[in-house]
Amino acid sequence: MSAGSAPVEVYRGVVEGIALSYARIVSQLREVAPQPERLFAGGSVTTDHPELLQVMADAMRTPVTPVRIKRTTLHGTALLALESLAPDVRRARPDRGRALTPDYNRRRYYTDRFQRFERVYDALFG
Image (cartoon, rainbow, N blue to C red; front, side, top):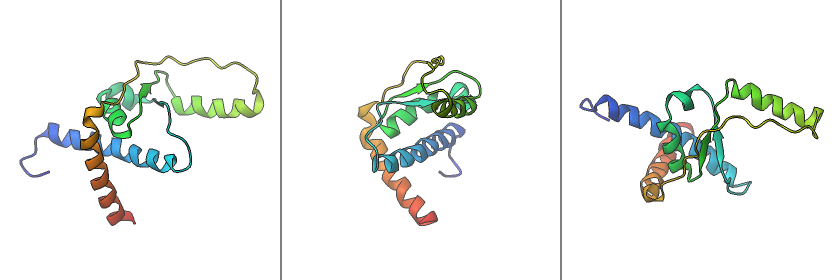
């Protein structure tokens, strides 16, 4: 980034930074769990900025499906509570959008970005 960076370039950097932050978490989870088959994303950011989901799918190398319900965190909390309170009760399936699959042609780009992101993160917080 420089003084000559256009707003669209700054926005792209922010979007990639968010996606790489999630990719970092997914990378840590892969150390203790298998590769996720898919990820679900909800909230107003996913509705208001759908371009973020494709970048996330590319950076995390995992399909991302938008969930289109309000208060997704509350919904998830209720589902966790139901596991204890009513494990045999069938769950309603929330409205979902089209899954965004990773574009593997971008793999090298995001591998490089992820490695750079990790170096900066470790320098700042390590």
